[in-house]
Amino acid sequence: MNMRVLLPLLLLLAAAAKDAGADPLRQDGLNWLQTMAFAAHQTDYSGTFIYQYGNHVETSRITHVTDRAGEHGRLEGLDGPRREIIRNNDQVLCYYGDRQVRVEPRQGDRQFPSLLPSQLSLLNENYLIKQVEDGRVAGFNTHTIIMQPKDHLRYTHKMWAHNDSGLLLKAAVLDDRGAVIEQYEFTQLNLGGNIDHSWIPVDKPNSPPGPHPESGVDPHHAYHGLHRGGLPKVAHHLAVGAEALPVASGWQVDALPAGFRKVAEVQRQLPGKDVPVIQLVFSDGLAGISVFIEQADNDEDDYSGLSSQGIVQVYTKLLDGQLLTVVGEVPPRTVMQVADSVRFAREH
Image 1 (spheres, rainbow, N blue to C red):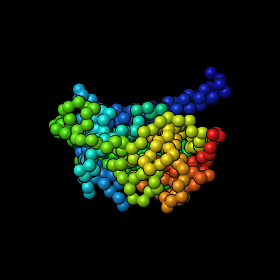
Image 2 (image 1 turned 180 degrees about the vertical axis):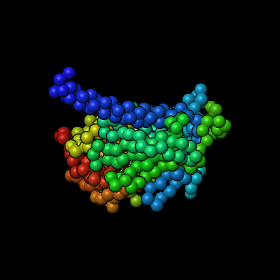
Image 3 (image 1 turned 30 degrees about the horizontal axis):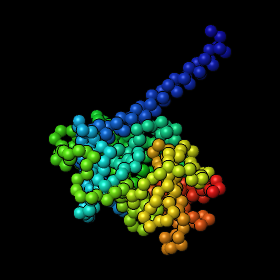
Image 4 (image 1 turned 120 degrees about the horizontal axis):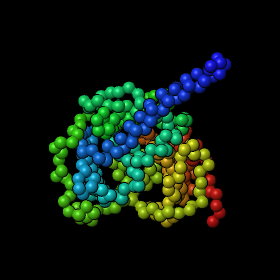
């Protein structure tokens, strides 16, 4: 064959071989994410994990069981006053001290080790996914996956999954310099075997035990105390029950990061409010952003500013007599960019 024809052909084959070598590695990372998402719901386990951000550390005990009646989970805080969440399929109950609270869980709510969505297609669009070095967590060998964002408007996520079951054993969120912002990690874990079932109700799964439970606390934010500690009042709303009704509010966001899609637009009638609060919810498949719009009432809570807890940023500003609050699992620059682009696009 003529060398002028052969050389371009060889270069083309070399490029194809290089691409073919990269694709399986990327696909293997996606396959592991799918295994991790599945394992969180199908594996029986019990153990102790820590949740850490900054100098704050919480220790919790978790138990997860699947049986003929479905999926059951128990999460107990081991520090401070009693905090406990019991899940039986779609029913969720919280306990604070001697107080029992019935919970209406948010659609798609995620808690460690169930941090991944069931649909992973958006992750592939918005993050570079790859396997990195293997490791050990709580005495178990792990595969390690890193999800690097394709922009600077969201965080990097690093996850360690058990080699055999795929259960997520450790998860860290990193800033753009590689520093850990927030981390979950098992310190002790039992997989399968003899796991205590005594806490699982034997009565009808939709009949909550105990008299007259109060309704409507979001378990993730309530458990980790997002509604405490000086965050603006709409952060408190995340933990206060209020029926959400779909609505076309007329509010829109012009500067969302690429890949974020609107998953809900609702109004909530909150306690002590004459006018419903509007909430727009966006997600890129891993991180979430909520935009709240409520009538400003000119009290001490109506202020502009930025607050944070772990990876959650809360940015509040006044806009034409409305109090606008953006809550997101994204860097501060992102919630501020989103807030500055909110506008009312439809007249009453």
